[in-house]
Image (tube, helix red, strand yellow):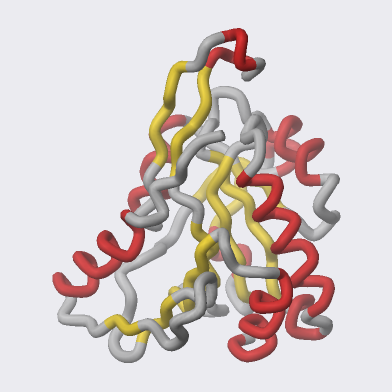
Amino acid sequence: MFRTKEALIPYLLLVAAAAGGLLWYQTNQQPGLGRVVSTGTAQVGGPFTLTGPDGKRVSSSDFRGRYMLIYFGYSFCPDVCPTTLAVMSEALDKAGPAGRRVVPIFITIDPERDTPKVLSDYLKAFGPQFVGLTGSVDEIKAVEKLYRVYAVKEPLDNAKGMAGGYGMNHSNVLYLMGPDGKLVSYYSESISPDDLTKELRKRV
């Protein structure tokens, strides 16, 4: 229903890379295989503390030693978010041992509606391994900034059937973070389950 701002992501990453004197390149021209860092340290990601299942505080440091596959979206998303989460779920299952080393994390961009319970119920459809994180508006904005995420609230007509009268226009990117919390690669929503499976087996 909403056009994503995924096109902004490479630009923002390049800006961050230029500031740090980094070199970015695309290793495969097929859509959806993402981009990887060839030298230096990507200025994407960073430490965060948010609210997880049962209202418990969850820190990025809690996942040290494991890979994180992070996706930003919202539970009221009508199409792109559930599709991307389904791709993640299928790829993790197919990846076998590599998939078991990865924690799939869903960070909401709509904290006003996505409470811990809402996220917990929503993510059950994609597998018990998914971790849903929310927080205050300021906390979510801070994490969005760390990951160069674009997210803007857009009013909707009630006739369109969206609860709450608004939707979220947002970038649609998967971030693979290493056991040290640093960016390994990132992928667009166009990546297929099979291609994501290959990437996980290659990089994890």
